[in-house]
Image (tube, rainbow, N blue to C red; front, side, top):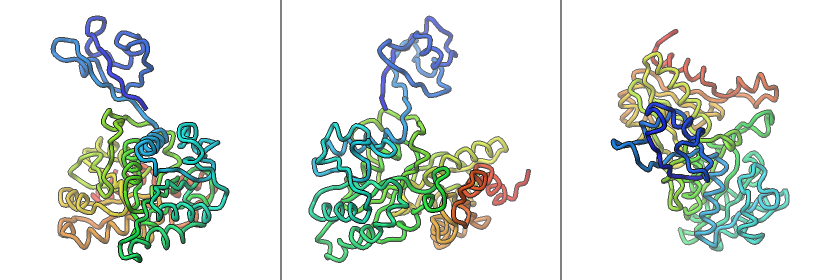
Length: 389
């Protein structure tokens, strides 16, 4: 990810010319820069009244690069931080999230482990209990089931069982939920699993901003934090502002973000489902339906206040997640909303869009129907508002 400043001049082009085409023609771009421009910007957006000004152009960054940058910055900031897991060092990570870290920090702080999740998770928890700050990477959270005793019984409970005298500053991170064509045993969402455990904090980033800010917050947190990433999102690019690129950029754990404001209905989602919810909202906007989309960011603690505030405005609520329906994140949100003052503001039942209540199919055509899709979200919103097309 990179941030750059460009000197834009009005004389060679029309003010309505798309800035991307100006950059391609070399009229506004210093030769030394490789520019990635957000689609839709025009020169008139970038110039002040006298036709000449320096503006920050928002570049784009991939989620994997944001995670990599977060780890590098925190490892430089605190020598107690180290990374361990399968293939994180010499192979640069199974998904290249740890690319370059071995060369920068050496084998003492970027550690390849054997294929033994319980073993290296136990080592990481022990290191945290002795004052180090490990980042324990799982190739997938499905494999972390081999280590769930270390996560739940050792990391999450030790501070309570020690009367608050022993902290466990550790991060458990890796891809969570469905990928593509990896079958029933490698496609589970663990948001509800870990979200039910006292002593854990659980975050679920969607875009590059979330990924960097939440991972940095998790590394700095004195408590064990589970960072549930998504394999399908690693290579996706998002606009990245100069603020996000700063070394001190951190997102507070426990705070949701309103990604799109609306007045007719609220959608609450996390991880990949946020993007699908925004796409559904944009489609519904063409029908005159204004959807408010909330990116949870944090599963535990859950920012119920932001959800309640939105529901009191829109009077309708739909939750979207890739996990199973029974005892899921959406179920917990529905329960807390019904127990809050927002209940009296609801004009329709809370509706949930979830993964199918089955083991994930391997067949591609069936797998596509097993998880939330834009058209499913659109139909659910219409159902809540009793609108039919």
